[in-house]
Length: 420
Image (cartoon, helix red, strand yellow):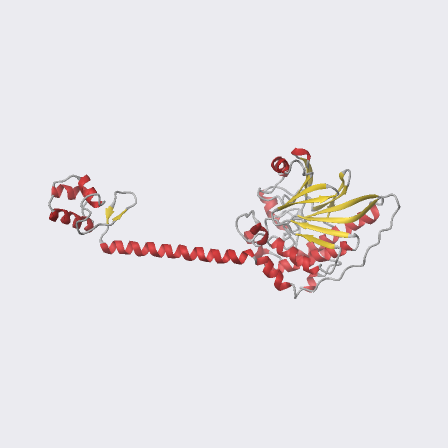
């Protein structure tokens, strides 16, 4: 084939008006020969040189130079946009890493810590049963609003009602400790914070919340929990608070499972602010684990704390407990005695594999539109209180019902609303 014929073929390929078969028929050669020229398998060094462009859904064809330039410019612009997006995501991630610590550092000099309550002196008969008292505290969703008409009258919930239910919880703890359980002596109160103190900003909850601002919600909830712990601290020698985060407070759309999940969560921010409020109350101590779960030893028994998310809510808590225990307990060589979980808004207890038991906490509200309409479920607003003996483990259990008929009048002792 002559050089001039090859140049003419390449020119026709650049013009992109004839198919390779038509070009082959014009010069008396096969379509495969034209394809070899088009893909630079043959006569590569003869000008003009071709640059192949893959056309989706068809054979390789060649664009003219102007079209090639436009395509390259478009590709460059797409790459530039992807690079800028990745840079923005990286900057946002670097900010989220320290979001909680940064806010807490700024709030430290501003927040005025609470004054300690009057100390409590233990007076009782010489032969008493010494135990540690444990409170499962979770799923308060303090800033959530539930209107009766949304759930056929089963619930009426708002921040003032949540405050009153916290007061009821403290009243019941003190009543049972000081008057009902007269043969027991409780020097320590362990508060297992299992998360979801706020409904957070996911699913549009922030706009529907009581204050309509997530930061205000966090401050109000922190004040509430601080006053609750302050009142309890006057009835125990030590109040030990161990907390894990829930799923509602997360700052990301999807679940995270590393330390970033802890740092990017409103539950962590709330409890860090609580720690500032309580820093002058010396018998309250806080522990913030680095992961989504933690193991706490009470009277020689190990309690595995986890909010329970990662699975959809509902009463399948029992089967999920057994499944999780079947995995976790062997990893810890059978040294987990109790699983403590929130999330499901359903209080109860179930045996799990490995010899441990599941203690599931309730919530501060009977139901909300999601539980009632999507899951067809509602349960009494309860928080679980129990005792732990050094020889017998968990001995007694008391599901405290925090909903009272007179709660519509609002708080009686805690003045969170006035301070805000």
